[in-house]
Image (cartoon, rainbow, N blue to C red; front, side):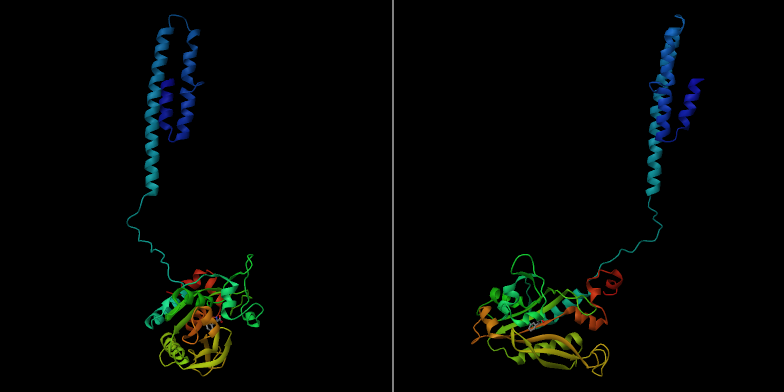
Length: 337
Ligand code: PHE
């Protein structure tokens, strides 16, 4: 009988697609139930009312059964989905991946701490600089040969460049914090140089500049501060030496070395068998630079220094390639922290 066949077919329809196929088969416009109703005019007149009633009753019954089954199937589907997404509370937990400070930032924080204890505040200045601040105000007019020490990234805007060192921050700090007031700041930040990238030199790196301005500051203060810093960062009892050097914005200029932290001065591959490691450039702020910052050199003097935290980190951690710092390789970064 049609009814039994339809009912058992409905009971077997287990998903939405099967249900839809069943609905088309029995209740659709060309389905079997409507075909029954369409056949009525062909019947003998006496049979029509009873047949029609029976067909309509079947249609109602199947529609109701369909709705019920559709609801049950939807519920089954939901139950299956919930079971699939279910949480197994007996599973062991997954350890969250913790981030950590970049090795450069770890060194930067160490440096901040050492200088903070000596009364230096952190002062930041822009990465994008003008030729005026990066060179001219630092005693390097256009065409000055010393500019060759800093290969520069220029922008499409004339006079606007990426800073090649943090020294322009000296002028910013003096102009912002002075005049007629002593200054003790460190200026950390990124520097950019148009250079061949190799294991030893990157096109971008950090520097930490230091600047102290006061009424009676001498070279002895510079030596004292750098000695204290070197002992704190590289270990107590470090030997320190100052070599004569030249920067247009300091006079006199020096470069500071510590005895090699790896071989203790005996000579090894890291110190290239000299026994010494260069740690920074420094010097007494040039009178022209003081004046450009708004300080009269007759009354005021100061010292400045600049160092590279990546170099420091390489020495302390035995890292042999500076390119790791900005290579974003987790295998490298995960080793620090
Ligand atoms: N700016 C110099 C450099 O990039 C370093 C330096 C800073 C030297 C301050 C002297 C004083 O090489």
